[in-house]
Length: 80
Image 1 (cartoon, one colour):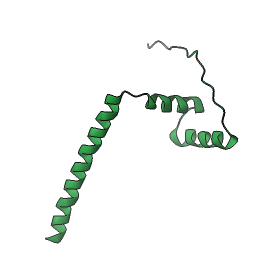
Image 2 (cartoon, helix red, strand yellow):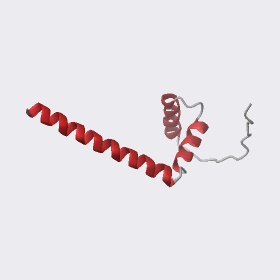
Image 3 (cartoon, helix red, strand yellow):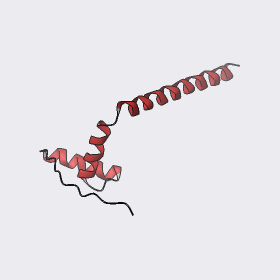
Image 4 (cartoon, one colour):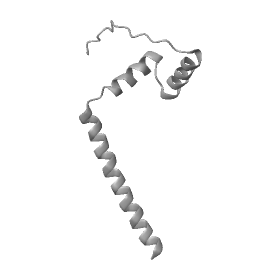
């Protein structure tokens, strides 16, 4: 059974009513349990290691090249 670590630190920010309402809507649309969970997920996404992000860029670049090749192939087929 995994050991559950208790969170002991608090980060506080002030929001306008409209900003908080937008966050609540985002929580619902993303399936987040709370604004805190959504904010935590977003913050850790920003702190992702650069190598992880570089890997995503390389993967996306490869997908774009494959897509471009497929579009060119289909274009040739349509013209034939």
